[in-house]
Length: 363
Image 1: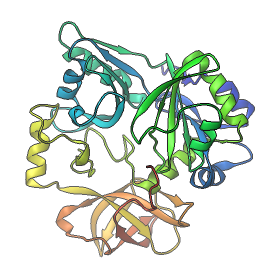
Image 2: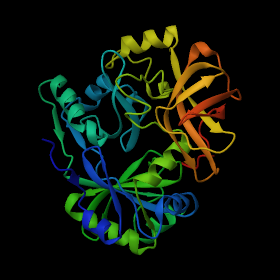
Image 3: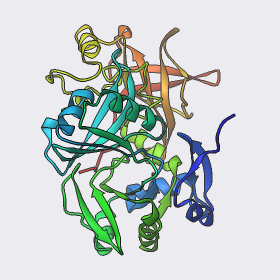
Image 4: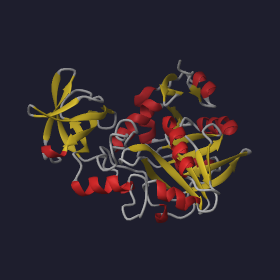
């Protein structure tokens, strides 16, 4: 018997705004809002600013002498590349090179790392880290201790600045602040391809921050727009572009692997795959005609199946169908080549392209 989905501390706010909800990662989260919908919410982030409740994302903390070195020996990216006050995208892999989760690591110091995994994978990431941690280190899950609000878009800095929050720090860095009695972390990260910030705030203080941002005429946005925005950027979603069956090498996420590090989970398998070359790799597709590609649709070169869509959508920015797909490397297809997607029994032409599908403005 499945348990009821968890709810954000802002659930009542979303109900009042006429949100449509969807189950995601064990949570009941807003998909889109009345009076807007995905297209208007997507446009707000590309043109001005939008705010997302992403409190379903996990939170975990590793503390104690050598915490950063321990995390560095487990996760793929190299924490030695950054300094305290910086955040880093990284991956938790198993020994086969499959991806348990992708996450953001906030480096507070040699003895303190804060992690933001995906909702459905938080318990497993915490379990793996806690099981490997040496004496003196603590690994704690803090999933429902904090909420996260993502304020994204070209006007995000101006809006948060007017609220008195810090906005001048660089991309992938974070700072702390106080706001109307609430303590929060302001990080220059995001998932939309736009200049943006993620606000990590205590669970019970989330409504104070949310209300202030919405009162500043920032459009609330749901997971529907979040998905179209990240797909336009070619960003992976765990369970679609990354999984226990899809390695960082296949997903072209090798940039998030510290290949020169002496140790991290899955190192031997990933090194071997990188050396041999993956049997498939993530590619971008743009439809040349009408149609909307979706996950698991087959991709063909002539009559030969050469891959499968992992994520597909209609791009509100480009006004065409776009997709990410795992394509067999043996097919030797190059960017610009034409393929076909089987969309509900009808072959639709698409062109191979290198993501992102739109020009990024994250910095």
